Image (tube, rainbow, N blue to C red; front, side, top):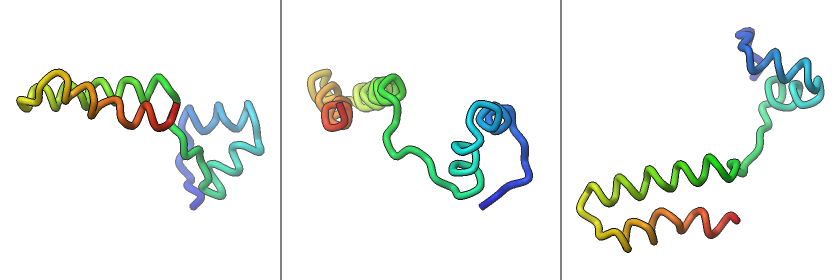
Length: 72
């Protein structure tokens, strides 16, 4: 899984923690859980898409917050 492509993120990870770099870029492991701010933003955009596709505001909010509620 090792790639020869050196990105700024990869180099930053290597400098910060060589073990994390090895696990992420050499072995291919990464976190399953998404950070809360990213989940919130994704839920917001999903809700807007539903609302723009003619779902009611209540339906859009309920659907967009299901995943956020499950992973809190």
